[in-house]
Image (cartoon, rainbow, N blue to C red; front, top):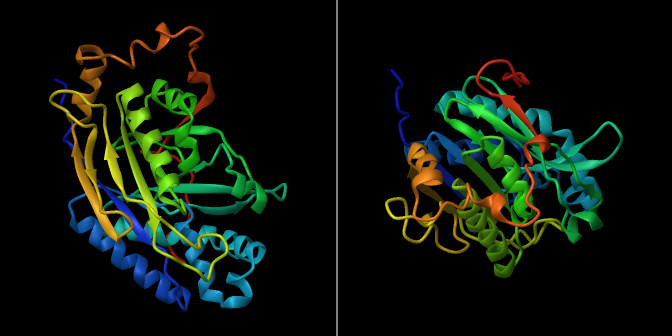
Length: 313
């Protein structure tokens, strides 16, 4: 007998970049946000791109006003930041996409990476693939590979901000089994927010998947990296009768702190691929030049053995 899965509730943060005076203050604020997100009934909480930069404020203007010192300081905190979120995931019984931040590689390069942590003490990491002009100027490099994380909630993947605007990345993930693609974003203008939103809606339509955008919001003029932030959280699916007429399951008010939640029936989305009004996923190969992309993706288990980080700090 095959048991059907329960619908999945996701909460996406419209997260305001603050200016915490200490790491203790940062932890207290993050604990409050996670508790509020879990109180919505969501099993998966999503935080935005470069939310980790907020930690630079804890070290005063000597660090936070200097971009390179900011990158190095926040990168040095990566392991403890992930360990802290693992504690929060266990305490609140939720999966969490940690707000992304710089990670320093062994060859001296910075990449922009986000970590997906589980309440069972597991963590998977996705690096951003395609750099924006701003990131290139900062000295951030493109990373990889693309990964799909097999979790108890379903198969989850991550496209960090600009990556969501490239259809072959989303297609590779869906061919590898991704059902939910998380899109943490950080955009300084409304135009940038809408580019990412358009990418999210297009990837959901093309691949019959759920995409989840989580933006930074509000001004943080103390920071040369995340000084201005515009956007709203959104949870998107293909526009299909019985799923969503608009393709928008939920969307928040522009640039205001909030949690935005929606509940998704992943099994219904699977059926859309073969029985929907339109069958974009199945008809992808009807495009001239379309090729299978599965080999571009790694599959990582967050059910059993995976990378572990200590949960005591």
